[in-house]
Length: 156
Image (cartoon, rainbow, N blue to C red; front, side, top):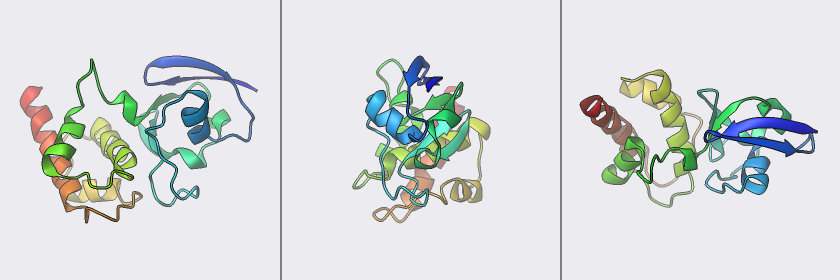
C-alpha cells in the first residue's frame, strides 16, 4: 500500500505493508534511528515522535495511520546544524544519562512546548508521564524543560 507522509519537513512516498508500524518505517525505510524501540507496547515512551503537534508512541501507530501526517523525530529538532534549545537544556542540566529514553523524552517535551510556551512543573510532569527513565529520577528533565522555556522566551 502506498502512503505519503512528511518526516522532518521532507515528503516521503512509501510502499508499505499495512501491518507495519510507524516506528518501523521511520527506522527501516527512512533510516532515522534516533527513535528507539523499547517495550513495543506503548508503555515506555522510547519511541515517542510528534505527529501533527502531538506526542505519540510510534510503536502503536500503524504506518497507514500516518498517511498525510506531519511527523517530527528527534533528528528533526536541530536546525541548520544547531541543537534545539530543549536539547541544549537537557545537556546543560545533565538530564541525559544512559540516553536510551532521551529521544522519546525530548519529543514528549517538545510536543508540550509546541502547544504550551510556558508550562508549569505539573504540566511538564503530565507531558512526560508516559516516558520511563531509569537513570535521571526525572528532576533534571523537568529542570531542563523549565530552562528551555527561559531560553526561548529570552530569544523570542
